[in-house]
Image (tube, rainbow, N blue to C red; front, top):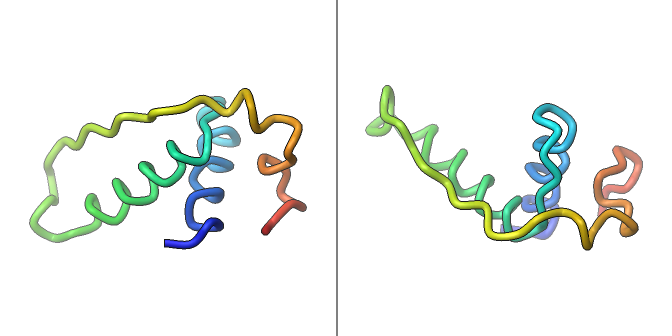
Length: 69
């Protein structure tokens, strides 16, 4: 997993759901998406805990589409 792997789900969460999450939460979402795509998990419900908010990252620009690290 790279830093960008964690940033992208964090951006997507803010853009599509209006939920500002932090980098750790982005990493958790990234992993959850990988697990959810496995064939053995088809039709199952998954729970993901998002451990941080995006508040401390607002000034960093990670939520901007132009800011790709």
